[in-house]
Amino acid sequence: MWDARLTSELILLFLYFGFMALPGGDRRPAPGRQGGALLALVGVVNVPIIYFSVKWWNTLHQGASVSLTKAPSMAATMLGPCSS
Image (cartoon, rainbow, N blue to C red):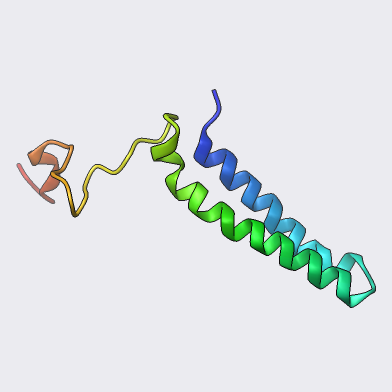
């Protein structure tokens, strides 16, 4: 079974490696800058996809247990630091 967050993070890792390798692969400065800008732009678009992938797709990661706008979805005994 695939996980949306891990898959999108893997795509971001490949984009990062490509961004790091691109300037050294071409001797001409202009294509390296344009390709690097394109990879950076795709990476910036991928970051919100990584963040919202838990809400968009029902995969292995669970949603937030504690939120500022909603009541916690976990037991009250788990919220305290040292409840005995």
